[in-house]
Image 1 (cartoon, one colour):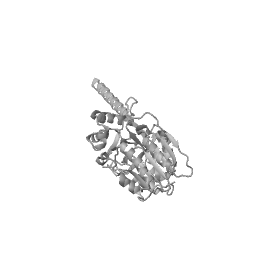
Image 2 (tube, rainbow, N blue to C red):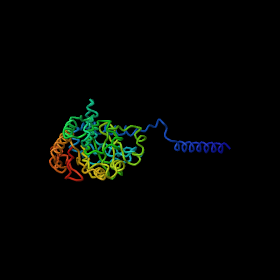
Image 3 (spheres, rainbow, N blue to C red):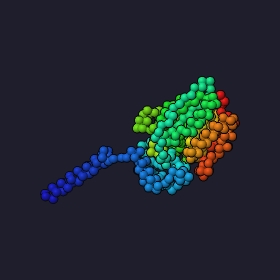
Image 4 (cartoon, rainbow, N blue to C red):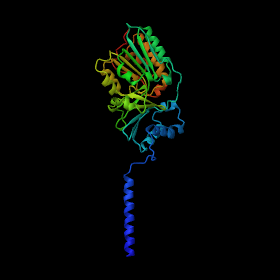
Length: 347
């Protein structure tokens, strides 16, 4: 009898243990089982790899496939909250298990110019052609080159509209690019959507910061892959894809424009160029790979001096070429898509 009683007690205890274990497994993670935010994961990777290696900005650009970037890609791929990380040239696409993406465009940018410059500017030449000078990276690189471009175009009778930093936001990009000249000085990268180590689209950073509310404010654009989060240094920005231009600008909306993307990687492939050309632009210009920012700035001014003297898009790109010895090492050239014989209109 005692044996049977002990046996029953043992069976009951065993059942309690099994039920308790099953119940525990079925419960969601407790709040104290903390999961890192996407931004925290990215920062952890940067701290673990890049900061420890003391890699200087210029060497990171000259050696875009350096061991540091390869290690960083591996670190992200090993993280349980990341579906994949894909390194292409010097851009890393990260897809998290929640389905969101972050594109590391220029992770070695550390300069920060705190002074605000001209911020916004509009000249009044009502009978002239229109030029948009957009400088989302004013906070980082300043506006000295934009001032020179503005002066040159203003002297040639252009009506100038300038926006810097946050003012060059997504809403402006969606509706106000209908000008004869569109110059954008910012950052760009590639988006590898499926993780096959192939770039699916060039993406261009606006001056609008990416926040926790961005996917709500721009829900339509986010769900239709018109925007993605792009990181420059430790800052996140709303970056637009070719889909945005294709949706908001129909054929003929752009008046035979010259689109000059003063950014790294803007002409890595023809994805962004085709979106502008299909919307009516005559020519699209941009760098094929990384470019050193001072080379980008100086050659931008030179390009508009050459344009004002009547040179064509093809001639300007041929004269500028790599722009500097460092760009030559980076294998980066200023190239164009579209009509190489096109010249900027004279007012």
